[in-house]
Image 1 (cartoon, rainbow over the protein chains, first blue to last red):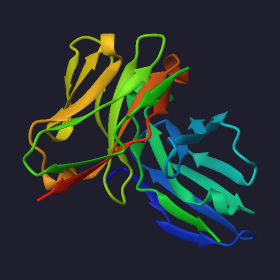
Image 2 (image 1 turned 90 degrees about the vertical axis):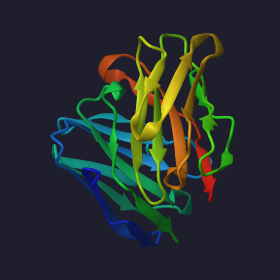
Image 3 (image 1 turned 90 degrees about the horizontal axis):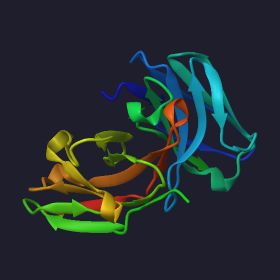
Length: 114
Length: 115
């Protein structure tokens, strides 16, 4: 039990599809994150939400659209993706946006764009 | 520039052997250092962290790490490796201050354990 649940675990989508990734935490954390993990690259921070407000967007293409309806849920809406977007997408949460709190990660969604 | 280097991409050890995973960082201020582990098919889990004080820090699962400022290193160690330790290990440094502090990640070291 990691405390952060991501669905689906695996997703295959065409470049013209629209899909959404879901993340849920019931740890009482105030900050939530989307990370992209690709082979041979450092973890890439995509978005940061603090108390449901987006506080960081690291130059992520607009084909990725996050949504945080409440402090427990985080979504990543996907549309018109490219094959290079294939990766493991990790959600994380923490008590606050200071990285010293430590992050709790979900198991990730393995995304394949065909 | 701020960076984290994990020189070993892949390491194989025998079960019961000792382990040391290397991590070097480049950061101008006092570093906040972390080790995370990612088991196959899982997300990352915090193993241990160093903020200040004793340079030898203990973590979960029998791991420890030593901060050496003179060498800009934060190497992870375990005296006796178990097969369940096979995983990807990531070193990270916290860059910035307060609520703006973010993690800079290394590329990871993949650990295989032979029976």
